[in-house]
Image (cartoon, rainbow, N blue to C red):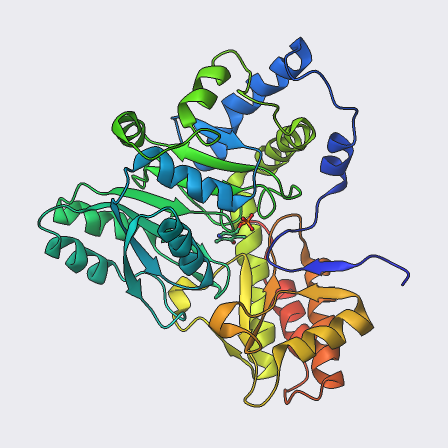
Length: 389
Ligand SMILES: *Cc1c(COP(=O)(O)O)cnc(C)c1O
């Protein structure tokens, strides 16, 4: 097929040319002066993206590695963690915790709403013995397109006075949707390279609070590769305890520069605007959003329900074959029932217009009942609103 493939899954996202070029340089000595200059730059500026003042530990791993790192650094065998099951990613994190032999308390949802701070507070109130050592929340549920209110959840935790650590997965929100590690009182923030950070997969991160570092000193779960302290110690001299993903770090330095040049507030406003345009299209098609709470719509992706009797994967296959565009599939219990439109990372108005046009063609080709004019509705919204916040 001629022309460029449209990668409209909610991660990995499009990697911009500036980052591709940065990554394509020859690999350098990861203990030499040039590497240490780059590491110094990253160590100073990466925390700005998390709005954190403490350390951000970088691992050569997918996001899943950073989930595991958060748990094994802070907890001891048989500790209990509370997981709010807002969707597929929360439930996958829960399974990971269980494989590590942690005890889990799971708060279920219908996968169409976010974290309910009151339910969270009630559950912590009941835990008089303080057996819950960590609360694990997914900020932006990539399987559902629901973005939970972390500030509200933290406030509810504070009200109960419960000492559990707060761990938040921001893999599909960091650098796309506003997030404040320090101000929101998060103890461990988990992130990955391949979504809002516009990098290929392969790096993941833990931003760590003082309270989490303190907990890590007495945490007894076995850990070696994931040990924060080894990374933090090596970082003191701009090094890593094992061979880092040097070329991805070239890309990371470029990604941070791009985000700070645009300005984080502009980045968030751009995502909000493109997300709202996407929702205008979905509504014009007469299709239903999976997220039922308009205050919690995700600005990095939109999950769209298929009409009864129509298979989301059949639609996605038609769109891939005819339009060379990849859309996200339904995950877990949502398999075949939803498709997901990624609108995060290195993304702009006409990329969105192409994506929505391709979906509208696909809806017709796959004979999915819908009203025409979704792409036009999105363009009208974009024409009628200003791109500047
Ligand atoms: C993508 C994603 C993950 C999984 O990350 P991997 O890099 O595939 O390990 C976890 N949580 C959320 C919210 C995600 O969007």
